[in-house]
Image (cartoon, rainbow, N blue to C red):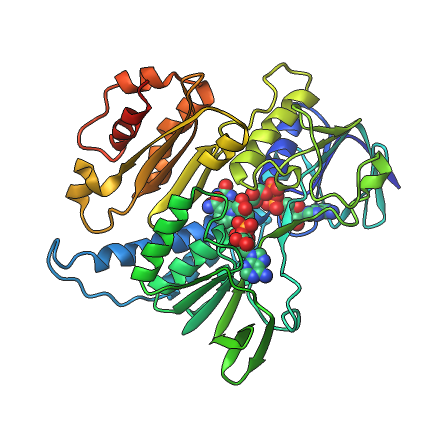
Length: 452
Ligand SMILES: Cc1cc2nc3c(=O)[nH]c(=O)nc-3n(C[C@H](O)[C@H](O)[C@H](O)COP(=O)(O)OP(=O)(O)OC[C@H]3O[C@@H](n4cnc5c(N)ncnc54)[C@H](O)[C@@H]3O)c2cc1C
Ligand SMILES: NC(=O)c1ccc[n+]([C@@H]2O[C@H](COP(=O)([O-])OP(=O)(O)OC[C@H]3O[C@@H](n4cnc5c(N)ncnc54)[C@H](O)[C@@H]3O)[C@@H](O)[C@H]2O)c1
């Protein structure tokens, strides 16, 4: 039996779910196809549960900062309320009934199963053929991936999916990969009492961020008792009665648990991209400014390779919806994509790093301010690690990138995201009034060296 609709959305991550609902509310006949959970990785295994973990770990860290500042505090870390909150408040025990009902309530027909493009404007879901008159939106996201390390594949290692479902904190934890997932998880479990070691192949943590961010995070991690091994080659992995072991040549690192956080692979295999002229083996689906990937095909989210963040997925969904509905609007613009690694200090950034700006042959000028040296940072005292770094295109006199590392770094970044997005003149930013004594006032100090 062939069903005919206007739009088929394959994969209901944050962007796909949003796009499907809005297109249905606009009066189109929409089928949404989902093989796992409506809403995708973010609400069930990623952003939301991990930020609940970060919030709980942050409370413990603040409690430990009481001595010398506000008296005494006795802390007894307990993972049970964190696990319960993730289970009950965030994920409904990894049951998406509420999200599915919300979607169908908007008029979307939900088909459960693996969607595959079987021809232009045609999607097959578990043998059921759906024809899409206007087109197909792809939002299939990514899955955790593990490196080809000898012995690793057969081990019961965690990915982010198992880590957010854990009911207990392991006595010790090896974190393979010091990117965003590894950094956030390492600090959470360490603050709950696990002996954590991060094992990173690259030269530094958070390789996509400013080197100053990597250095600061390493310093904080080591101060908190987290082992950080960078520039190492893992040659093997094994398991015995002592636990799970990573082999670094002759050296062995063993722990109760191993979290593999070495990146993601796009869910493009078996999607039938060849049927619409797209490269089946590509790492990402190239899209234009309207999120069009081919005639009658739009792609949004992590699979477009424009930044693996929920806010990018939602931003792109909005553009695709507009295009499908024939509405006018600006083309996608990625100059000011904000990124926040929710460690403590938060590492928040927008636009280009200094190195990226130099690679683009810009005339680069930078300004930096240390948070502990700002009035608010000095008042804050313990837990005040951080800095503001600004990257200016000196020829145009505008910021092209910025980093805020520190307490509430992600919130403070908002001001700088506006500056990069709007191309606000650096001279105008220097003339602004910054409230005293705030963390964001450090922006003013960082602007000073940018004066011509
Ligand atoms: C641990 C962790 C923490 C994160 N924290 C943050 C954060 O704090 N902030 C942030 O902005 N981002 C965060 N991210 C990234 C964020 O989760 C993703 O960018 C976000 O989920 C958007 O992904 P997406 O829209 O591409 O689709 P996804 O969320 O990956 O969803 C894709 C959906 O498509 C389905 N699917 C795939 N193939 C098919 C098929 N053939 N047929 C049917 N269905 C299919 C999948 O089952 C899935 O449900 C985090 C990621 C991880 C791993
Ligand atoms: N707060 C957030 O917004 C947030 C949080 C988590 C994840 N995310 C998104 O999810 C994406 C994936 O995160 P991720 O941390 O899995 O990937 P990542 O690419 O950020 O980091 C993976 C790390 O693993 C290292 N690695 C790879 N192979 C290795 C090996 N064999 N041995 C040791 N180290 C190895 C890499 O050098 C890299 O540093 C991120 O790029 C980000 O966009 C966002």
